[in-house]
Length: 350
Ligand code: FES
Ligand SMILES: [Fe+2]
Image 1: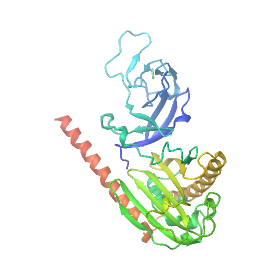
Image 2 (image 1 turned 135 degrees about the vertical axis):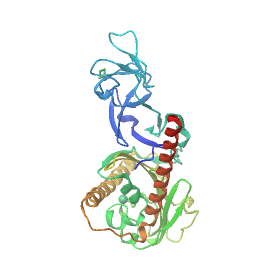
Image 3 (image 1 turned 90 degrees about the vertical axis):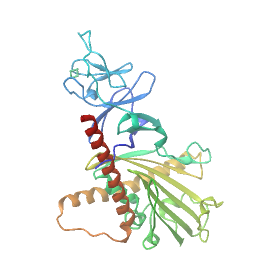
Image 4 (image 1 turned 60 degrees about the vertical axis):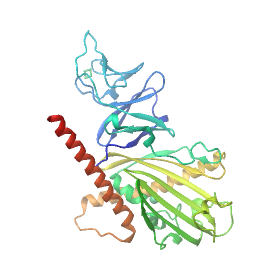
């Protein structure tokens, strides 16, 4: 169900303070804690002794101390202290996970630690560019399987019905989507020409009148997404449109972390090419996006619930092409990863 060899967002960096933070990621219990130099670490959230969650203990210097009998574990997962004992048994270790702080987020690698490469973390194109502004970022838990969310993030058309007060309007109902497979994932995109600007964007677009609008919906394996919105004066659509002098561009970065098969932690932030230092614009954009994502949450929670309950078969329609192709390729990657793991296990057993 999950691709393990991937970077997932564990938490916003700012969420982790002096206390341990308990998380569930890909159906595993994980604890984050901060070492004395501020570096964050991630361990399996179960003491090697009697399995009390380490998150119920406390942070002591560079270690986390179990709240039951005081065993202490370093960021590597090795037990480094056992009260009333001069020796530490072999095997006194909990699993540790590679963890990297980037873009204000803590990224966790859920595969074998030796296969983790920080350069594989999602690239944010304009990060650090002073001409771009950004929102502070936000998060929510959605009560659905993460694949309903990748469906959603490869489906530009839904804004016409789900987001009429924010991202969409009637102009988004009927323009066909072009689907492109990339080595990293899938893109569903379309230009809508000579249309009204949708409500959420009116505040940020600087030109008057109608627009040409690009919706670029991209999801990369397993579940990280870039949604790019480009607005240019009507008649200016095209491959160079985002460089138009009056173009408004909003890049929405969306990172999905499966909690388990029925829940997903959703992290996001937005970058924009206008008003880079305007805190009020950042706040308004953040509020608008939050409102829109609450609209998604309502839909996705209900979709999950009904897929689990109803017995009648469902149909697929033209707009499902990108989501379905993405799912198929992701399933192939997951199957290949499992086959590799089985081969490794067999080899180890021999
Ligand atoms: S359960 Fe953790 S020290 Fe005993
Ligand atoms: Fe949406």
